[in-house]
Image 1 (cartoon, rainbow, N blue to C red):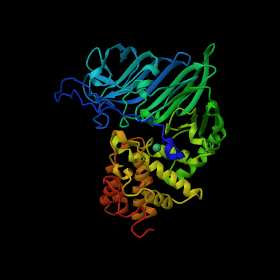
Image 2: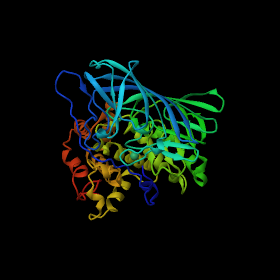
Image 3: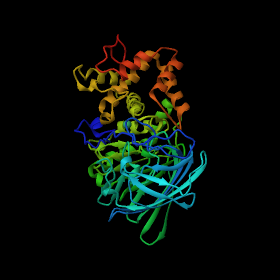
Image 4: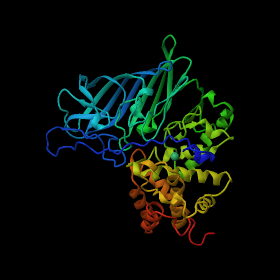
Length: 481
Ligand code: ZN
């Protein structure tokens, strides 16, 4: 969520726009070993992800020195080839020292024609459908690394933040960076004793093996998107607790949040209550831990890091804000458990998380979903550019436009109006149950909605997601005020 959406203030524009360069190579159709494709074929980001293999697990083991922004260490990738490979790519922007494939040194180079991806050429071609182990050793200063004109890694006075969407992993670990290839993670980061190293999943342990330094070991046991993995280093206040239903609940606050600190705590500490409410609407909470991290006012948005969303402290500048907590935690179901199949499907993330805000508002007695949707519809006159963005295919530059959230959510309210509450919530819960751990597309959601409701719905979705201009009837139907 961008700060603008929650506070009504001017947006801190940190939107990432990647140039849509064209592909320069295509896989050969022969049975001979091929170079793995430099992308999965996502039209918004042609170089996102790679062809030829699928990752099951990342083991990230790093040392980070805030004083110099030096990040070094090793990422070990467990993957399986999907074809016979002469070489394959990793999405990565840091300086690589060495690469091993199945314990054998591999050649590697950075390919400027492939958006600076790391091309790995094993000693001998890799057979199809075989497990491989790739060990990448690296060291760099991430704040100096520019990819597509952007540095997503944020250096702070006492640490750093690796938090962004759609791309952040290139600044701290090599990966197959696309939501269609989810994996589990072990993340261990050694930092000076005076700072914390926060990430996602369960904090397995903290340990000291040399004077002045502490290891922070995190584990995510459910498949996760690369962009939903985050790292926050700094002098955070860390609270370790347990949710009423027994899950680890780790929260952390940067004291530099200043005046917003208490309001931030009064919001984030309600996460287990909010997740329990959302579970009553969407089905069981999908992961093994809950939490939240509040950063100093430098991020410009909030992000649905899996199990532990990250919030810019400015979300809490005017007092408690459980709307943003509901939004990022609704993403645990919609975006994290069920991931988008292509980046153009961003409606599946942002409209659904915004609907989570609406349901929470209704639960809190602060306005029903129908009221909030009607207000959104009424407050944008037909000539507002708001209606000139397609929530179902907004384009790279408008991927996180308010229309994706606030027009997109009207499509969900219109669906609820059309199919009724029983079918609507059955659709949401079935969607999560059927796609949890994987990824899916808008057309899959339309098909599921038709299957469960028994109604033809193509026209409804075309109107709300794929047609420019303000729909004639509001989200609560033609008869609604
Ligand atoms: Zn969101």
